[in-house]
Length: 312
Image (tube, rainbow, N blue to C red; front, side, top):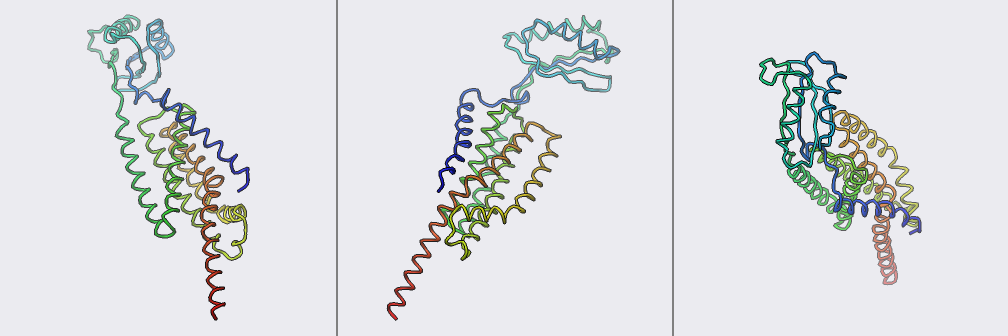
């Protein structure tokens, strides 16, 4: 095996190490829906958007809050500005009441009025969604998929080869999670889609490429070729399939980006990790292990033939 192969291991190894460090120190960058937040909604009535934002900023300035998001929404009574924030204040109820009173005063609304266009609503702390069930479902789906592909590869090739495919899928998934941690991408309740999507792409890509590699290794013209030559030949014959798979995944990522951008980016990072490991890293390990058995079997058969010739 050429020395430059070991250089190809350095990048994924560093990504995994850094990902592990970040996971046990700062953890994931959770989105608001997973970390929880406080919510204020202000119906701006006849006020312009710029005037309304100026009044809201004037009230919130100096408060011990960290504003995470402004958004403009609509309801049956007009435009509504929604403010999501977090705070380290212990008595959040008092804080919210003070903000609410000052907003009523700033907008000149009557708190006791029945006019729906002049309401200000403070919803208190919005509890975070439980991500545990998402990860549990994701883990179960991946385990079922890995068991299925393990049985398939074991029956078609060998148990050792099945283990190599499973380990490749686990490696790709861990690389995607590590890249998400490194890039500090906010994870949402849809993050399980990125994990499952990466695992599925890895299963499909590694299984197809490995089958092609095995077929090429059995050809008479390749029996005496080096591992690098077999891998290069396999990559060239697999290029068309790889392009089609990549384009299909690219379309899927682009479509999902309109729904959840951060999860789509994580999914794209997972696909990149799969492409790298399946073409630059894993084939060398597979070729080294598999072709060693092929050559051993070939030598054994040759010896058996010579013994038969001697007996005759």
